[in-house]
Structure formats: structure tokens, C-alpha cells
Length: 420
Ligand SMILES: *Cc1c(COP(=O)(O)O)cnc(C)c1O
Image (tube, rainbow, N blue to C red; front, side):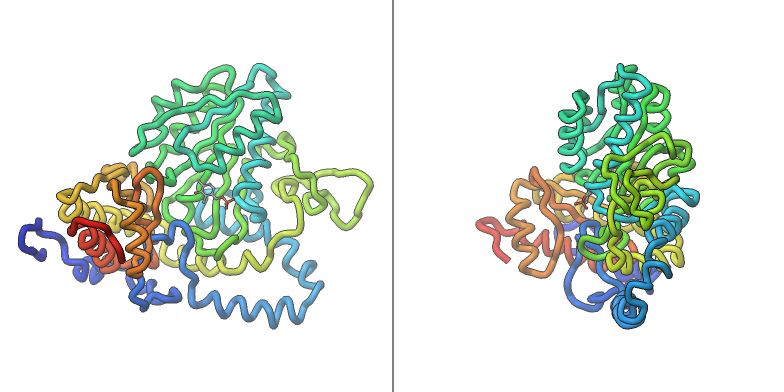
């Protein structure tokens, strides 16, 4: 059934979509789910789960408060790798011993990019280039710039279509005998373009390069299969689709075949073979532990465990199916309501090439987003002229999408200055 309004194309009733959504019941498990806020930013900072409040409080009283420093021996020393293994198995297609949690994505990127280019330079000094795209996230680009300057390397830029991303054709044209490392996002933060993980990894490997995948916008929303792709390195956020809370530590993945070959540049005591020997010289721990630097942020690793439990219960394939249904519905509403008002779609229309968000373009996007925030509708503004509609599959309803886009339509429908 569809609803029709005067002068508008018929659109699908959101109540119908919510009624048949098998994951709809999970929404009530998030804090604030019953508030009238329309939240389109779960891809920047996920909502907390209700269970998390209890987990945090119990941690203060029972673990930190009761176990005190004994907690390190009992559980915390191993948490970066035990939780890393769990994240690897539930979400990343990574066998145990290759994933660890700690630091920020930025710091992981630095450590793994440096480790990769140094290794390549040691084996073949003619590999002097880092390949990266101009639409990659700023921190990835800035780090590549800094590392290139530090190590006397060159950046080779791929310039993708702004509504798309890095395709096999673009990557094939950029890599060669001089490539040391390729740095790619699985889901582009602006366009939501979903890169072909296995195909791009193969192209880089055929050229003799290593690949580092940034999974910030895919972990928890799009299935990933790092071992299956034959990936070398990966990093990702836990405060986006993994609802770990502001500043929760990131994850890093190093394929087992590279252990013992790659050495990371931040040689801290926590990544040493025997931290409490406190010896005179640094000797890295074996395996992924050798990529840890300082004391891990244990408190920051609590909330993500609730989201991991929930995603495991729902199943990542069901999460991806709902994500696609949400982005498709956003496109349906945008085509019916917003295209006549001058809005363009800056994300791929083909679902197979689209991650978990949709970016809409309009010359007045900045004003519109400002007004929407005042109305309790929370998308992101992204230069140039993009309204980014982030749809966190387990906490977003179809009704929320309908309500939010109706507000965009209302704001764009009257001429003159927009204010909320
Ligand atoms: C969010 C995001 C980051 C964030 O890095 P931080 O160190 O957590 O600030 C990095 N890369 C991508 C692609 C992102 O989307």
C-alpha cells in the first residue's frame, strides 16, 4: 500500500516497512529510542545501548572498585586481544590472533602505514610510493602526507568520481613497481561508495604492494571478510556503528603472515615481550600484541561489547539487509519529495555499491542542516553541499527516515532564509 499526497509521487508507508522489519524490536534496546529526535548520525557516533549503563556501573563497583590493580592480571591485560579476537570473528572475518583494540584510528593508521612502508623499503628500495585517493578521510590523507615526508616517499593520488569511489580500473592504473602501500576506505565517508575488497586487494598484491583497509564506515554495518580478501592490514572505529561511545578505542588488524616481518614505530612497554621485566631494551611481543603501544583504555572497551553482542544476535547479514532497505527508502523519499526541490543524490544508486549512508546535495545544505538540528533532526553537513543521512540499522526506524526527510522537504519548500 502507498500513501499519496497532492502533487507528489506515491511513497511507501513507513509503518508498513517497520511492521515487516524483523530487526525493529531491537530499537527499544537503545537509550533515547522513544524520544522524538530523528537521529541520522549513528555512523558518526552510535547511540548507547540501555545495557551499557549497567555494564559501566558494574565495572566501577565490581571490577575497578573491587579488584583494583589486580584487575590487570585477572582480565584487563588480555582484553585488547581477547576483544579483538571477538570483533574479528563476529564482524571482520578475521581468525584469532590478528586483531587488537587500543589507540585511536589515527594512531593505528600511523603505526600500520609506517610499518608497511618500512617493510617494503627494506625488501625493495624502489617501492617509494603510497597510493591513496583524494576522497579518502582527512586523517588518512594527512598521515600519508606526513609519512611520505618523514620517509622520503611520494604520494600517488587517485581521483575518484565524487559520487563514487575507488574502482578496480582506477586502482589498476595507479599501482605498479614503485607502489609500496595502498590505503583505501571500504565505505567512503562522503559518498558511501562500497569498494570491492577482494578485487582491489588482488590488484594491489599483483603489483607487489601491501593494502591497508580503513573500515571505519563499514565495521558493524557491512560484512567484511579480511582473511577471505587476503587483506594485509586494516583499522577501524568502534564509536560509529559499534556504539562504543565518544573516543572509544579503535581496532587494528595485521595478517598473521606479516607477524614478525612488520615492526611498528611506537615501541611502548605494553607491546614489549615481557612488559613487567622492564628490561633495558625494547623487544616486541610476538603476534598482534607487538602492535600495542601503551596502557590500553579498558573503560573505553566496555560499551562496544554490548553492541557486539547485539550484532551477533541479529546477524551481520540481517543488519546489512536492513541497512540496504533504509538507504533504499531514503532514496525513494528523496526522489519523490526532494528531487523536485533541487536535491541531487551524491551516493551510488546501486545498492551493491552503497554502504550504510546516503549523501544528498543541495546548494543550501549547510543552512538546512543547521535548521534541522534545531528541529531535533540530526544529520551531518559534509563539504561541499552534502547532507549526510546516516542510518544505523539496529537503532533507526523507517518512520524516523520518513519524519526526517519530511522536515527537509518542509525547509526547502519555502523560499527565503531557512531557520529552524
Ligand atoms: C571516523 C573516521 C576516522 C576517525 O579517526 P579517529 O582517529 O577516531 O579520529 C578515520 N578514518 C575514517 C575513514 C573515518 O570515517
